[in-house]
Image (tube, rainbow, N blue to C red; front, side, top):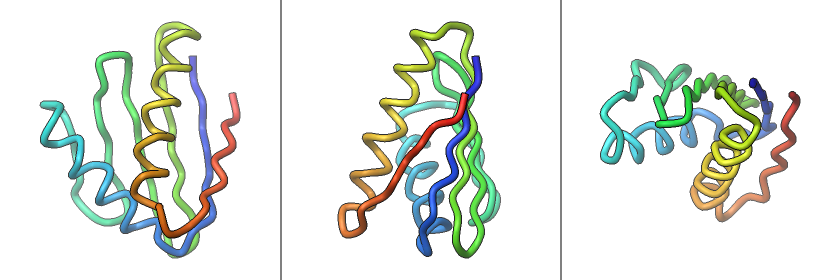
Length: 94
């Protein structure tokens, strides 16, 4: 199962960094080489992030629909917490 969200925000690079850094303290497999690309390996599947000056793109992959729903929820809750000053519109495709 796969899902992708593209979020319009001028803070995409900051949110990507916050997200990966936050989970690097909780999960053993995270990668954050630049402010433009990162990934977090959750127990239910990988989460890949890409950012530019106006967009944050998130791609998820899981083995089941239930795990995909769970992973979407985790990602959304954390991003919305990081973006408390800005209302983010997160719309998943897939």
